[in-house]
Length: 260
Image (cartoon, rainbow, N blue to C red; front, side):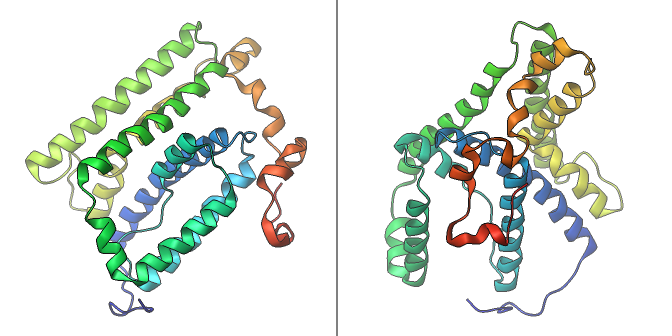
């Protein structure tokens, strides 16, 4: 591939707004994958500045992808997080070597054809295992909340229910009618509503976040029920001495990308 091989860049406001909402959904997926990877790699909780740094680099990679006209944007590989959990190998060196292999295989099409010949049921079976690990990691964080609290039970149950039912309605409506439930003359507005609300993780996370930050938040007991006191020392990179061990960059790049 070479830059702009599919022609000069064009701009469409409707498509831009749709991609903005898609990118916002990808942020939720990326954040969850980062947290799951740190947990399965036996690292400390990721400081917010480290998550922002990773998402920023992901944005740069998506920009580079657009220059080369790739058919899909760059996002985190949730499956690789499940593979990390299965193998217990969290070394950066493994990721770097794997990236080199992928670049090499992308250049030689015969190797790509070899991997493409693997039967789909094998991939499906692997995905079942990988996603099981990732889903279990998300549920494991509930141990830091007070699950005996009726407040926690309501938020958890309501978020799960809405995360399943609302996207199901949007997807079924789109499959039958050919367009989403929100169908106005402005395509960009339709995409801004229909795209995010068709994502189960986005809807569940949005509902849980809204309820968790609006129902009795100014109470010390509730704060402990939410599990906030477990994460206080990880809000800053320098508050925990182990952060340097797990999240420092190689080749002395911390000077150019400092964590806070």
